[in-house]
Length: 253
Image (cartoon, rainbow, N blue to C red):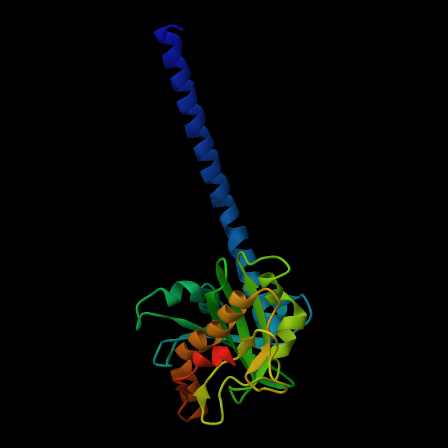
């Protein structure tokens, strides 16, 4: 092959690469608003489902029933999306997984309140680590900021039929009515117990067969995520709330 032909082919390959790169960049740019909207709707769905809302008109229901705030690690509200859709959307974009990676004092913590004719719920995000990757969820607490009204969990890469079962209604329903604080106002969360939880235990649910590490991840997610909200909970309740020194030991119930 002549030097001219080789140069031509290299030039052609370079142009194809440049054009393909430009097409992909333009496509990504065009798709970005749709991707962001889908992420927003997914978060709305999580929050509403944790609060017990069963319909699928998520955007309208969110507008009607949910108010969004962001608090700092002192429990003070720093973003109020109650009457400002732009601020609300800004709060929805906060990713607790990313916030947990920041240094203490630099984190923004989303808080959502759900209000209907049955009362008010506080819906808080949670984030943690499963067997193979990140897990996350939302917990809806009743007005006592202790009793669980509902939860929703999701994951990135847990094993189908095992750890991925945290997304199933049968597993999530177990958390309804459980308490995250003990009688001394210490945060103990909810422990997923391998082999089955003791009957009527206020802080424990049955584990998933073959998914011990995912269960431990869910347990740790409760205490580690809710610990961030202790100052906020304390201010709302007007009383002291603590992280129990033995919270991690509770994993061995």
